[in-house]
Amino acid sequence: MKVKIHALFEYLLETTEAAPEAIVGFSLSASPKLGDYLADLDPNQSLDWNGRDFRGLPELREQVLAQAGLTGICTPADVLITAGAAEANYLSILQRLQPGERIVIETPGWPQAEVLAKAKGAEIVKVARSEAEGWRLPLDRLAAAVTPGTRMVFLTNPNNPTGNLMSAAE
Image (cartoon, rainbow, N blue to C red; front, side):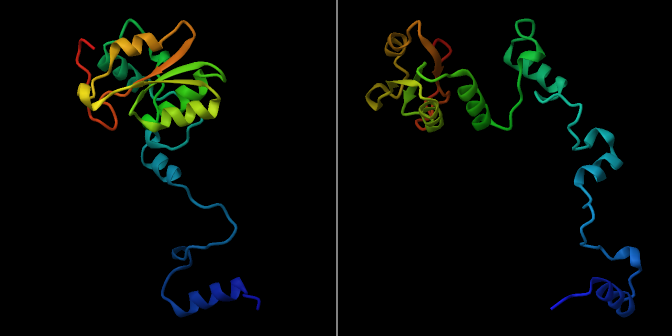
């Protein structure tokens, strides 16, 4: 069965009190985009990322440096804004870790690091926390696990899943 779109449109015009411009067409024409509406309201709210820095807004990167106490040590160009910790972990592990390189991971710990390290073919060395030690990070075992060939040490603070928070001395 063929549907005659123009006939349907004409029927709608004849049977409703709506003006032609009030009827939204769902034809093959381009759909309006949220970014277009935002840009009309305020150009700074546009979702058009052309010409924008993929690392994040410079003002935000400067604030991150200030909050971390790294102003003067690092520059805003050293900061990458991500859409959360999972994306940051993903980018750092997949970009910095190469097959065969060593990563030291605490256990129990956030599982994403181990999964990504396995995907890269890395050598994974685990440092175990234990309930008997109050889930504290065993710094002596951590130091022993780190060798000159260690490419990355992955720790979470507070530790996930134990919730243990490292002290300033640690």
